[in-house]
Amino acid sequence: MRQKDKKKEKIMAFNIIVARSNPLVMRKLNIRSSYTVKEFCDAVCIALGIAPVDAELNVEGSPGDKLDKLFSENDRIELILPKSEGKNTKAHLDIYVDRTEADEDIPEDTDVPFVSTYTHMNLPADMWDVRDINNILLDLEAGAGAVQTGNMQFYAKDLEYVQKKTINALRRRFAPETAEKEVNNAIKLPMRQLIGHNKLDVLKDICEKNHIYLYAGTRKAEVVERICYSFDRDRLSDLIRDMNIFEYLCFRDYLLDESDTRYDNTVEEELARLYDKGLITYIPQKGYCIAAELAEIFEGSFSTPKEEKLIKDKYIRTASAVCGSLYGVFDREMFDAVLDGLKADMLTDEERKRAFAELGIRGDINNLTRMDNERYCCNDSKLKQSVIERVIARRNGSKQIFIPDKEFIKKLIKTGPELGKKSRESLALLITKHRYYHYYGEMNTRDILKAVARSIHWGESTEDTVKIVEDSLYRHLQWQSRSTVNDVKLQITKIVETEEKNIPLVGLNGFSLNNCPKEMKEYYLMLKEKQEAEMQARIRKAAALKKRY
Image 1 (cartoon, rainbow, N blue to C red):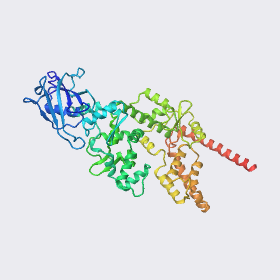
Image 2 (cartoon, one colour):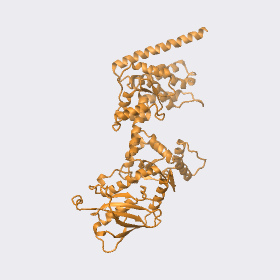
Image 3 (cartoon, rainbow, N blue to C red):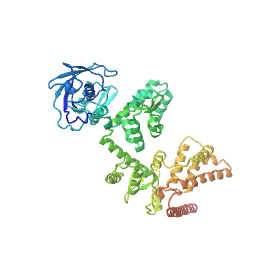
Image 4 (cartoon, rainbow, N blue to C red):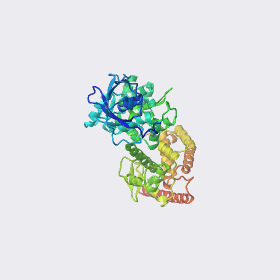
């Protein structure tokens, strides 16, 4: 109905003033004359940053139901908003509304009220009295980097988000089909309340994982306070910044899920780091809940150019991490192939080119070292230069590369190259059974399994890989019979030889021996055999010289 009558309508504008506010709280509301009085009152509330409530109208005469019947040119009315629960209980708000001239830049086809600001914009938080909000904004606009109020902290960058939040709130009320998604308030809980749902043993485990010191006998309330104090705004911001692209998109979708509760366990799988910190918790009848403080940091950049830049940066970081792990030494073609696997369509060719050129300049991206011929190398301190040289030699300039899909990339990011399940279990059983333990410099079983997978992945010899396991077993095995020692070594060798066919190899451009092209495989095995023979010859020569002298 309103669409048809739009040409006959006119846009009316009002100055909205909060009585007895210091500093003065004033907004300008542009709204079509066909809106009802109830819709007008809702728009006034949203313009002031508070949830719509039933307002009492004080107006001379007998007001009609529509705005053009309510106001004459010089009328002034008063809205009295009732007290609400929570922090906004200082007093009810007396709001004076004066008719004024409509803004010239309001689009004629808009059907949503529009708010312009005379003094200050409201912060997007329904719990705050508008007078508190304006005090905060005054301090921020005066140059303060941050303002602390109670247990909340506001930053100057919050101002960028305020107007968009207000416009979207008006859209959600008057044109829901045009509104953007917003963080679901049903899944947010203040950090203290969220962490307090855990048992004391769980809280102590959170402290241990995050290096939060506790005295013996510390009570639960104090443990909760220590955890909350540890995760201040800066640390929470770092958590969001350090998420890979899969974690962030899951985090984003989770916050914007409009259902009342959420039971999808993929949230827990993707955001395991947040679970370790107690910032997401499953609560019966409520589902998965997240710390409100963390959600507010996300809200500050949601659907802004700042978030777009953040997502692009995450695609670049994730792609470079995958390239360093999968290929070891990689070029632009490999980098683009991984971005394609990630479906990073939002990055233009120019942005990809610039990002690749800056990988070696930015020291914060995955510890990469720039090499000659526009390549990068995974800067692992455990790698010897000779290993990297052998990797490059085995490739023989081949342009064929293994292109990972999304699922392969997600697994690689979570675990890195790893042994198959059967091999992991068998090798772990051998280590547990025959291992010699002592107090210093001892790797745990998981570290040994990772070291074995990494050695195979980088193309080390079978003998060197087997030796990684033998070194942890030697002191025990030396007291066993020769047959036992040989049997254990044979079992380890068989496991390693099996996994050498399955694990992706950096010397095969990310292919494994099982899935690489035939010519690549033949050349790789021939060159590896030649290199190992040369290495054995050098070892024998060195041993002979040592014996001679």
